[in-house]
Image 1 (cartoon, rainbow, N blue to C red):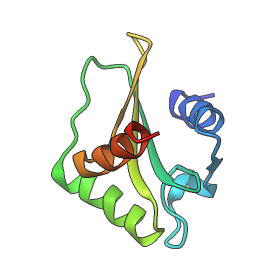
Image 2 (tube, rainbow, N blue to C red):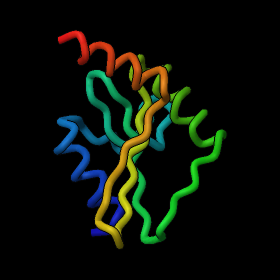
Image 3 (tube, rainbow, N blue to C red):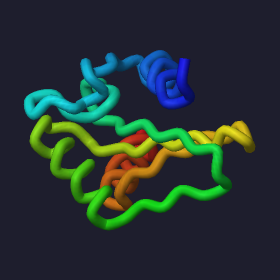
Image 4 (cartoon, rainbow, N blue to C red):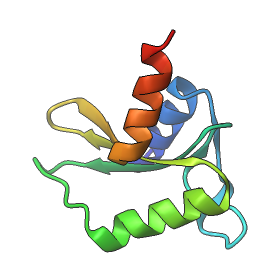
Length: 102
């Protein structure tokens, strides 16, 4: 199994979502993982860095907006065995404020 496939399978489990067929390549079903709230794009790299362009983030954001979900980029750094998630500041603050009021 390739690294990206392991990443998608792992994220499907930990985010309690479902993987999209064809890894989101169809026009009607984008993203790698869908939950009720989030549209997650999964990436895996053996390098010590990962570049996110404005164009890439824009694509992820548009696809999430069209499916009424919050866009999330989930990245795994294979060598360091570390994972991070990225979301917009506005989405983070919305979630933060909702949790902070509990």
